[in-house]
Structure formats: C-alpha cells, structure tokens
Length: 226
Image (cartoon, rainbow, N blue to C red; front, top):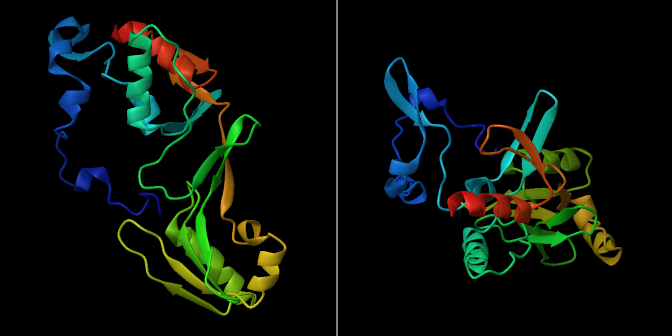
C-alpha cells in the first residue's frame, strides 16, 4: 500500500540512521547558520547535504497555490554529474530511477516519462506479472484484478509475492486475443505516465521556485555546496 498501512510514527521507535551524518557531514556544522530561539541554538537556516536529497528521495505534495512532483533519481548518476561539474563540464539529463524497480522508464517526449511494469506470457491463458508501474501498490492492484474476476474476465488469480517483489499469476481466457492485438499493457494497467513539469521546491532562501528539470536543481545546488 505504499507505506499507508504502517503504524503512526509516534508508536514506533525511531533513531538517526548512521548514513545521515555522511549525507549531512559533521564538518559542515561549523559553517551552517544556526538559528536561535529563546536563547537556545536550534536548527540551521537550512541544511546542505553532500548531494541534493530532493532528487534522491523525490518530492510529492500540494500546498496553497502550488504543488510539486519530483521523481527519484539514481544517487550514482547524481554523484557522476556533480563530478562532471567539478571538472568544468555541464551536467547531463537523468531519467527517474527507483531502487529495485524492474520495469522500464522511458522519456515519452511529452514533458514526462512512460513507466511500464514487467510481465511474461506463460501460455495461451496464463500471464505472470512481476512488476507494477511506479505508484501502483500490490493491495490496490489485487483489488483491480478481483474486479475483473467479478466480471468473469479472469478465471484465477494466484499470488507468490515476497517481501520485496510482487508476483501475480493470472489465468485469462482471452489472453491470446489480447497478445495478438498488443493490448496487454492497457488491459492490465501495466503502463502509466510520470510528469516532469512540476519540479517545485523551496530554495535556500525559503522561497518557492519552479525548476525546469533536474539539471537546473543541480546547477543551483552546486555553487551553494561549493
């Protein structure tokens, strides 16, 4: 369910991950502008991690008069781009990347990306679905398949999921017809789109700013970090 089934944060034990002080390096503490409240030093005006975490984690949300939708990107590609900028070269465009995702993410040429899950046709009536598009969750997808079964369009749904992998085996009488008409992706909702036109963030001055793409975010981050 994408984390929505998790317990409330106030009910579980939390601690700082060891990687945090690598991303927000202790050597930077001396140059951060820490704020003061009631005579006590509190958090700095803004933190500056060693790489732009808004591109690593992505961002999604809405606010009064604005919204944001930034996909996740590969940390290794981000680091490679920063090294390219250190050498005086221009950063290159990066596709969205999600750890463990086994489908495909391709530029659709329409200010966004096409995200495709993974499947394999086993025989004339059996299809094996082993990856869902980004943002589709196992519980919701199972409900969708059960709706098809309720319409007698699916004969059987079997599940072999693991902790990290989705795995449906579905028996579909008209599978051969769907395959011959190249309609499997649409019928099983295994393809979605991801927009790249709403990269909105608070900048280092605390002002909301719209960025053209991930490269512009890198270009603004680099001189601050430098």
